[in-house]
Amino acid sequence: MATKQEKLELLGAVPLFSDLSKKDLTKVLATAKDAVHHADQEVVTEGHGGVGFHLIVDGKVKVVRGGRNVATLGPGEFFGEMALVDDAPRSASVVADTELNTLVISKWEFRPLVKSHPEMAWKLIEHLVERVREEQTGRDALIC
View 1 (tube, rainbow, N blue to C red):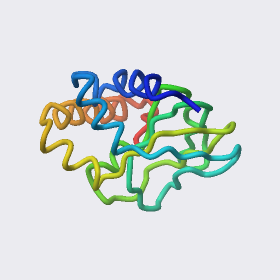
View 2: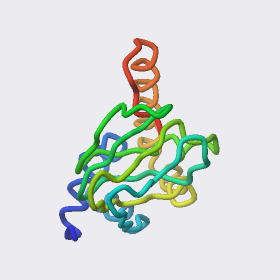
View 3: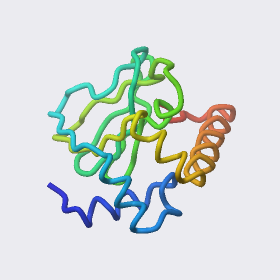
């Protein structure tokens, strides 16, 4: 299991949180829950609702859209950021490729953070626009 310091470093590397102070990152970490998933376990399901953002601490996942593997993600990478904004169904499934540890931030924990840190909202907008542009250029985006 990762230490608090390692988790803070991982959070600080996520574009949504990269401009936050260590004090504010500590507040974000306090809202996060540790989740453990076994190899081959579906973490999120395409077409189903989602409640939050996952940051991979240890392990790897496969991102599957329309039955096709579109990406593999590992430590420091994340998925589910769109679920922080709306209640739309997940646009891809994410399956643990190995034993997996993630930090999960739910939308009901994230929204008060954004209200007190508007720069996070701007980072989220920038990230989502980047994903839309990737989709428009025909590359597989990892929007979950």
